[in-house]
Length: 172
Image (cartoon, rainbow, N blue to C red; front, side, top):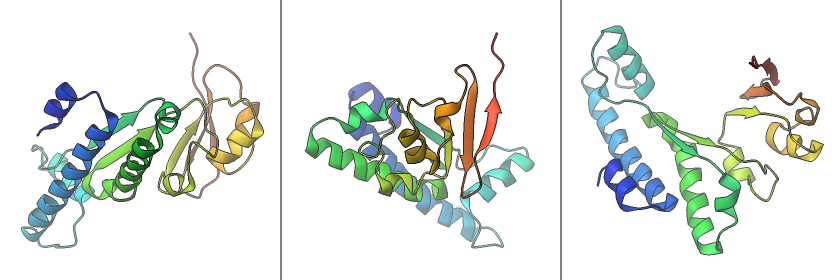
């Protein structure tokens, strides 16, 4: 079914992620077909998207953003459901970018038992607000610092292996 059918028919995050994995496979095949029509068969989905925007036409494959809020709460459910959920998240995090499917995980509890290494390794960008203890900062960023941030609008942003950058938002 389509995403809206899954969204209306299920309140289960695992079902939505199953749909996203199926969509990822469908998109992958579509991207290969689209690449065959170009002079560059190694062209990627992001390049096809940029080309469509540059040519002022509707893209053949549009980006899909999956946001999972309260990731920790889901990870604390029953073992069988958590394993399946974690495998789906890991699969999307590993291969989703190639088909313009991106995943955002949000949690107030970023400890090692919640954000496992297999998922963390595939999340290229990280945004961290103030955390209560240094160990949480090390879990998310790989180093201390988030425990010393200001309360309102202060954050650290890390993309890839580069050092984290401190950003400050404006508070009204």
